[in-house]
Length: 176
Image 1 (cartoon, one colour):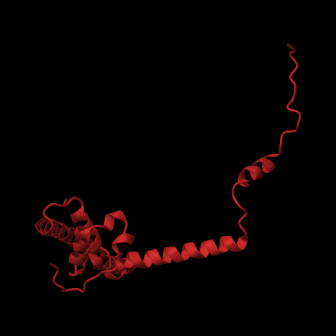
Image 2 (cartoon, one colour):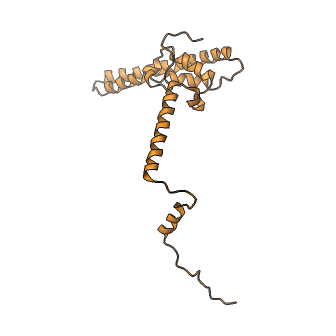
Image 3 (cartoon, helix red, strand yellow):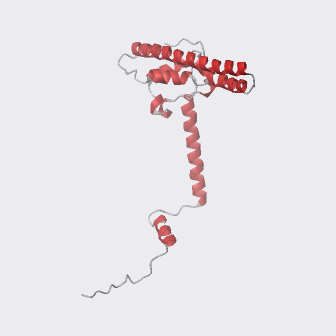
């Protein structure tokens, strides 16, 4: 037994060469730039179709948080009514502009308006949530109402135009 170590008989490969060797698999066929471009375009088209189906409200295209007849009922119920919450964002913009005015009374009134609208939106959300849970429980007796109140309130605070999926009902429609 000798204490001398014999080398591996070849130089250590450069890192760049070793990583390149790992990236190129002998099992995978070489993909051309045109094939990559075509695959990208196809994937982009699939995503666009999925987005359109999601915005339209197709059940298969919806994420888990929006699926089910209960959630559809809640969306339709919320979309068939007006609420102060959907006007909160434009009101905040007005408040921002009013606070730029260097008159303390106007600034105070603007901030007071913001808090009043916020309080009304929260109270409306509480009543909306209770009403939605009661209606869902009567319409779908075996289903869980967990999370529906918050779902309804959050949807009611979004501007109608920006809701996703898009509203399926008009304001004032009767929801059964």
